[in-house]
Length: 457
Image (cartoon, rainbow, N blue to C red; front, side):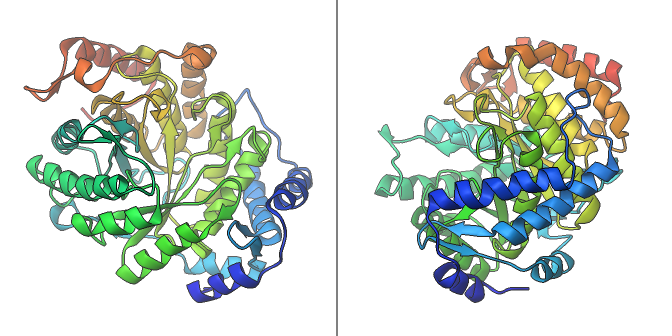
């Protein structure tokens, strides 16, 4: 496989072009050409695809896109290119069972297939959404440890304020926020009885490479996950390459993040699906990941529960899971906030779609992950229960459930309710949800059971 030094050489010496030219004259035309070449067509009537041939064509198109377009380095205005031979070699050599966590919480992340009876990995929590202060941060993390029995790893919040002061990127406060989030998260997980549970979005409070590297020394372990993202579409910069160099030499796990934007340069769901496959290949070759975390997202709605995004996720997840042994997660953001029926319906739809299509899940992004303190342990608990309740489900059955769920909420996505805050629907003293939320959860759980979800408890 191409090593990091060679990748840096290509970032410095590859073909030169402006960013605008890369976007409009290289990426977009090639993507459109490949959609036509491989006859990839969106089927809105079946948001959870059941078409194996389509999945394989999407995968071939993704290889073709990655080989022809490459990854654009913003800092040097150079394109990092890989040959098809290098791509296929990378796929063959990619890891398939990375082990995260320590002690009794250590576990191998195993690649899955569509309709698989292998348990999906549940990477759950806040999804990087903002929490207003350190006290709530610690309370939420302790609740995750004690309240989420199906959690395989945790995704933490971002600390928005330190001692009443707004955390700004590339400031000393950002570094302090990262240090404290690492320390508080590890302490809270220990208090909750899951000391070895891996934190896989290290470090959510970090916006810069400096803060991520500095903050990691205060509680993170090589067996945690180090989330490093690409830039939409198909771009990287020196900050991300700095992080990759650091984590590789630490011996840590890189969780390679991607977020193709439906309605942006990817175009519609077809282009988003193909680009998602290209990002999967990039996660192996350039990002040097132990796994991929991806979340195709709607440019206007800011969520992943839209019908077109669900189809793009389904088509690309099946393309990847049928043709690659490199494990991956689909991260989902829903439009509605905590303690609303819509939120629980959205979560059910996107999680069923991901798991039945062969992915594992990250979940935590409620209220589009943009409202401060708008998340509780109930939403990730729900996501994990749904994920385990559809293990082995056929795509045709999953598709029918997803269609019924979409009918309940999709018209409301543009004006989704924000719901309630953590403190409004979680009892800080008893460390349990309030009665009203328990009753709502029970009601929607019964509905999903009638639709065919087989809950474990």
